[in-house]
Length: 588
Image 1 (tube, rainbow, N blue to C red):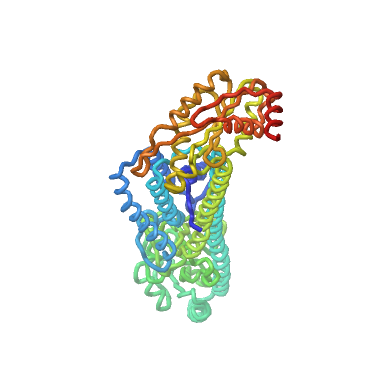
Image 2: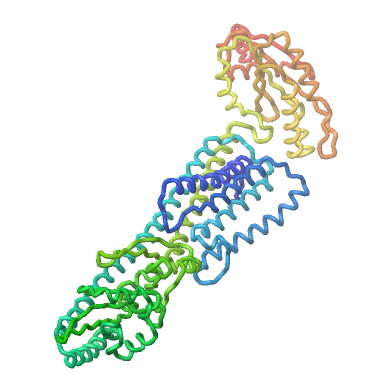
């Protein structure tokens, strides 16, 4: 079975494509006004703008008149668009496996999924215009409304599915921030407790015992806790008293020389606290410092500083399922620490944003004392890409369903038209004529004509069916062009035509028939042949609305036709009494 798309179906498809490009900007505008997406948009402003431009292009193309030269130029354009569509679709499917630079559309997974859909829609629109030229049909208005509903519903389902993907990703990014906050506070609390035990044991010791204790604790703590890199002991003037290799190197490299750090150390707070700055973080091992003061028995003051590897404050194995988000803590406006990339600190947020396309901003509170901003960036789009492949399928299925609905509706329309109209002449069939006559039940005066082409069977035998079909089409056109006033024209059986003429005096019938027969008798030029025809006609007139009965009307008109002499037309007025007399005569 060969797929056939009619002019009407093509027009509806073209309108549906235009509507699709109109729906997306509406969705984009709604999203920008009502949603609070921070991570990304389903329909970006650029996507909405491109969709609007595509709508305008198709709108102008719809009313454009294409000459032969323009039509020839559109053929290579359509082929090019097909190739671009194929490339974009394959690039979208294989995007996670093949590095293909796609410019701005690559910055949003949803823009990337829409790119081949847009290209397919534009290609289809241009092809329909090239194939059918006139795409401004007003038929199937109900199907156009249904197609708009289908497109709106399919686009809304696609949008809601895509929106859910974004919300899930955003929730996961915030979940990672929350886990980091919990883990950081727990680790800091545990290390403070461990550090406080050292301070408690060192309190009021003499110098000798204090030094022994510090050396012992340094050995055990650095061995038991991977994150503890060393202990540093300073006197009241912040001069080095003791430190393991890591701590001495840390001190000698001037990590405590910054004025803010010295001020922090000299506060002489009785509470264990912690701090970090750019000097301690911009190293191969970023360091967080725990600080406390202890007094020896000789009233000597010792500053004890525990140096902790900031990379190891988090148990990253618990964050593996959220590893596709790269998270940075803003320690200061000029310093950002990476949770996921070891020994990585950035000085400018702009430098971080340059590496990523989408992120969320959140906050963590440390020990109910300090609040830091946290930026969580998407670094791996594998899951989002897989989900956008699924959501794109919604659009493809919407287009397919819409196409099938339009074809079914058009096939139903064509079937109804074939049942109502004659395929050769396009005139009403007799069965349909009966339905059309219902609208004329109140008309009192009308006439019925039957016209029959003379010797038509011989013409078929001589010239064949194709030429005779063309003759019938031309005869139908001539009859329609000749008739005036209020009338119905139908194709009768074989080579006959039936005319109902309303609200015209019966004495005008002879003149009307003469005009019709003269018009039909004009020479026909078909397939390099000149054909001369004659036709015969029968007519019957009525004066009451109750006489509209197609079965009896045709029967009586046929009686008039059978009474004809060759080439002579008869116009008879029938009463019910005459009808009974004629019937009795025929039966005897």
